[in-house]
Image (cartoon, helix red, strand yellow):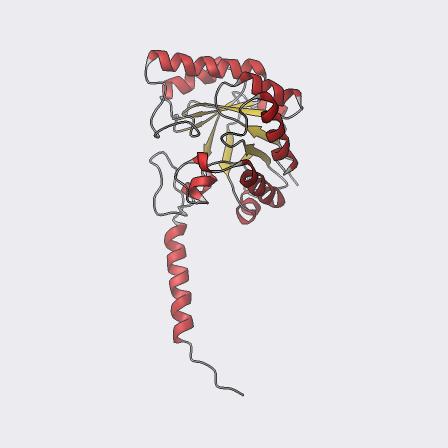
Length: 254
């Protein structure tokens, strides 16, 4: 059985074999993706939108994240599980440590939080919990999904955040929705491996949402790498089942 990568092993992949990360939100998906050779599984707060039908990631709380992390953990034994810290769960260092602890106790191997909140990152690390950073577009605070860092000032700010997170000791950094050149520049500037989404191929790895990858919903964002159409397959299978039930004659009583 494959042993999940630890933070030091993930760090050692910098500039080497690229890291493959995918989200999972439930036990059946976790059982499947754990057998596929991924490096990391992210229990993302994106579950608010793709699993619970909310309009933004801000609408999922810590209790729900704990619930889903526990479900994924029950199905995973070979892959590092990253637990997303939801909005309003890390407003200060004390709250951040309490929330991160709850997510790790539920089964996360590490936690991920958005933005350059160095005091929170340092407090979580001091509590012995590995941290993954996240820069660029931050879904918990973004008004709309659009490229970030498109001006010199905003690009410099994102690069600075990544450097500060790197210096604080995060083991990896997600870069979301920035120009390809900026993602590549950040990747060269930090020690931690970078994991991109909608940020080009110049990062040390990639992350995708499993719902988009498998086509579980009829629509997906433009940056999604759709590899299947399970929504259509579900429609076919369920329609066939319903039709079979209706046309099967009722057996007479014995």
